[in-house]
Image (cartoon, rainbow, N blue to C red; front, side, top):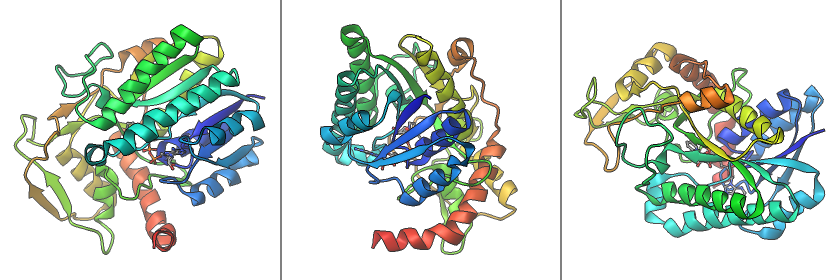
Length: 345
Ligand SMILES: NC(=O)c1ccc[n+]([C@@H]2O[C@H](COP(=O)([O-])OP(=O)(O)OC[C@H]3O[C@@H](n4cnc5c(N)ncnc54)[C@H](O)[C@@H]3O)[C@@H](O)[C@H]2O)c1
């Protein structure tokens, strides 16, 4: 039986990957300190073990070497999917130390534990933020990596460390550079649950519930088709499929590589907004504000390399992502929100 360690498995992207892994026949060990992830999500995931696969949960912090080392001592792990990180750009600018310690030092501990326990395969959540200001669109993997904030720099440092560790120790990595992840589990078992939420789609959807903030649109004078920023929204279930393919590549003896995960297509903020109105059937109040600093006009992935090498092709549309996100948001608003607020105070 193949057991995969999933760091950050109680978070948004990690939890959807846990579901994909057990559906594909893997056993899973979730390693998470629950700093941003949720014990409720872990419970929901554990209830899916009926598929015959085992999901174990180990509460621990990557910044503590013993915590992560004990995961490898306790379980017979074949490979790692590494999602655990802090990922809010604005916070990383204000408090870079928090990001370098958690993302870079935490990953150094993880890689040390892997090497000491002879686990030499890792799939890593990198980001389009490693490219920085785009020099051309769509962005392929040959685009220079010049991140413009500490968050992006932590991820690029980790990519570089992984190359050095391959040369020196033979540690094989696949780095997946996500564009904007969106959507939720099609069966609405889990979904996006960030506190605070900084992503566009859940924030538009939240504004449709009572007590929700009016939606703020930043900048309508960009040099784009309708003046608003364009981003590449990649569905979280499509994303999880790419992780399975990357994992299979490594388990079959494949080497280190890196891929964009996006759709090759972009949607403007206004298009996303209209899709949310269509899906919810609600009118959404909007405040138009000035541009935010550091928001490029357009970020779209060239995903041909992941198609040709991994055979990965995203299948879901923006409407699919918004519809699944809305179904999850209803559950969140009706059942989980009160519990979460109680937990915070
Ligand atoms: N969501 C996106 O659009 C997006 C885009 C690009 C890249 N990424 C990357 O994908 C990964 C997952 O993102 P997400 O949106 O699911 O974030 P998330 O905050 O929902 O999940 C991160 C998880 O990691 C855990 N964690 C953080 N630090 C830890 C530590 N030191 N030890 C143990 N656990 C720790 C948190 O508790 C949380 O459960 C991150 O690495 C992020 O940088 C996400």
